Amino acid sequence: MVAEALPPLEQRLEAVAREHGFAAFGIARADAAPQTAARLNQWLAEGRHGGMIWMENRAEQRGSPQGLWPDVRSVIALGMSYAPGLDPLALADRPDRGRISVYAQGADYHDIVKKALKAVARWLVAEVPGSDVKVFVDTAPVMEKPLSAAAGLGWQGKHSNLVSRDHGSWLFLGAIYTTLDLAPGDPGRDRCGSCSACQDACPTQAFPAPYRVDARRCISYLTIEHDGPIPLDLRRGIGNRVYGCDDCLAACPWNKFADRAHAHRAFLPRAEMAAPSLADLLALDDAEFRQVFAGSPIKRIGRGRMVRNAAIAAGNSGDARFRARLEALTDDETPMVADAARWALGELAS
Ligand code: B12
Ligand code: SF4
Ligand code: SF4
Image (tube, rainbow, N blue to C red; front, side, top):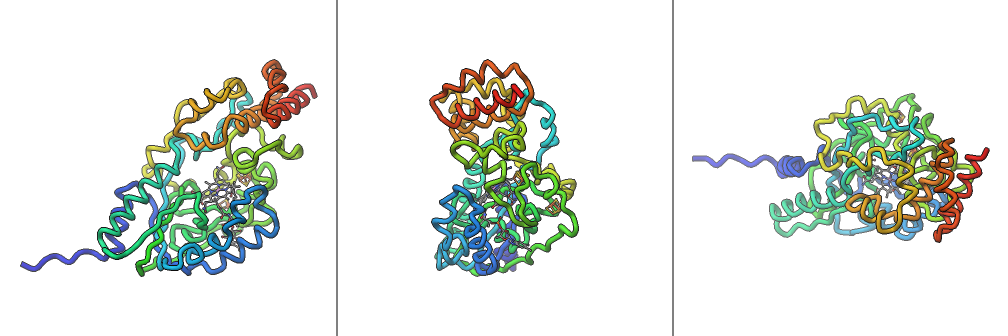
């Protein structure tokens, strides 16, 4: 009897990735995105990263896969879908509620994606003894968007995130670097055309040009990464967003093709994250903050930033019922919270 030939390694690898919950899969040569380093350096030189000094510190490693790991030959790019079931902007007109970005309403994607990446990487090393791998999601000096585009997962849209024909703007990205020479896919073609919906939707004009984001004006940066008081001229634009922002992603017409059936169940919204009451957020102490946001990416920002953000949202609410709680926060031990509460009281008074 003749043994049946196994399908090529790349095909089996893709099947394993899908078994582990990845909805998008592609392969790029490690040197497939040569323009990236210069664009990153220009972005940093313009100061667009604001206070994210960690972006600057390892820029050489971030700019190219070989800069981080000279032995890498191929990049396996993977995407997990978190396509939402409900309109992410539905709470825009609910001043009593805080808006948490869709990506953070379920389990922490760092944990879910990392675990799945490790499982796929272990399979690969077992299949090809002597090969080596490294896995990354979000926090390492890796340019996940251009590498995913080079691997054929989609293209970097004018909002700068990766857009997929099958999953819209709702993919978490992860990467496996390997010493193997794998067969690369075709890079994704830019399908934005003359559309500018994401640029037009941005509440704080954070796009100096298409494909470029100035983090210093982006609500995602301001509410998550930025420590300290938020610049005064940007506070009104934040509206009732207390963690991240979905507006440019949600505006993208390609989302209508997003296949909800492939959304990973771990990212379904937790009840307390879908529409948190601003009054509850304003009342959080440290212990409650840690309890409510355990297992969520939100836990990283700490109580201070969350209550600061909630105070700004209360200032934007036009609802005088927040006054008493805001008054109490003007003495808060965290200066950025006290500052936001004073500003909010001023807004409610005017
Ligand atoms: C730093 C960072 C941020 C910063 C800066 C955002 C940014 N656009 O860089 C802040 C805090 C603002 C942020 C916000 C968000 N982030 Co973020 N972030 C990152 C991180 C850690 C690094 C990104 C990076 O390298 N930026 C540096 C800049 C220079 O790179 P770039 O955006 O690719 O810039 C390119 C363009 O400028 C382009 N370019 C320049 N000129 C030209 C000209 C032309 C013609 C073209 C085509 C391109 C082009 O080339 C540059 C290099 O590729 C990645 C994780 C990772 N390790 O990759 C996640 C990541 C990009 N974030 C992610 C998400 C989900 C978000 C938010 C949607 C979260 C939210 N809902 O609040 C928002 C979206 C805001 C936005 N519109 O970008 C996802 C995106 C997934 C996807 N499908 O693309 C990532 C990949 C995390 C992950 N593992 O899933 N983020
Ligand atoms: S996430 Fe929000 S603030 Fe940031 S660029 Fe997109 S629309 Fe603008
Ligand atoms: S909204 Fe339009 S311009 Fe923006 S990423 Fe989507 S298709 Fe491209």
